[in-house]
Image (cartoon, rainbow, N blue to C red; front, side, top):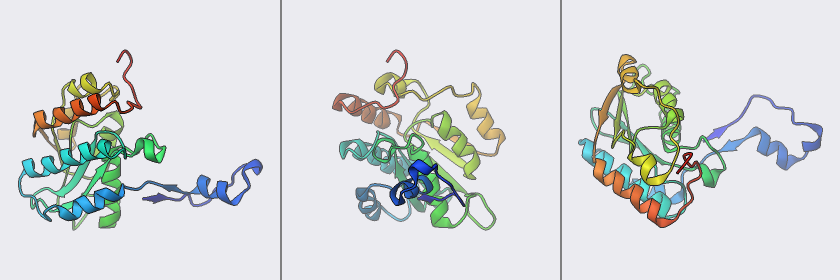
Length: 215
């Protein structure tokens, strides 16, 4: 994923070729292992359990291989189960606080499908499958992405309590707002399996880059 502003004039002190490149291009990439793992997956996963199991596996591989936090998200065709892409958290490797799994998955899917709106004309309904409720930033990304369904492993306090990550000030009626915007919400898919990965992350000693106050 490469974002290029139309035109940018850096300060005179930054007038070097290297710094101009940094200031005008942002590269966010999935880790190499993710492509190999996706190639091993079935092209179509008809059940929610199969989709979530794949996402949870990616969330564990991501921190085990030191390529990001314990989070993954997959974009699928909602009705057929066809896999578009599974993204993982890339915040620390990419030095980018917005490189959450949901943002990575949605952005790559939009590039693959050739449009910024995953609910655009001529496209099947798409579903985002995530190994826990999106954080406050990714909640906004879900709303604007065009997906028609969000499936999550859980939405309770377990993620923050187990890992110490800060998920931000979610709206009180976040689930109702999704439904009002025509986005189906499915909660509780392989909840225990997802929580087990969070415990494994905690016990691994990996960095909690966005620690909850008091954690």
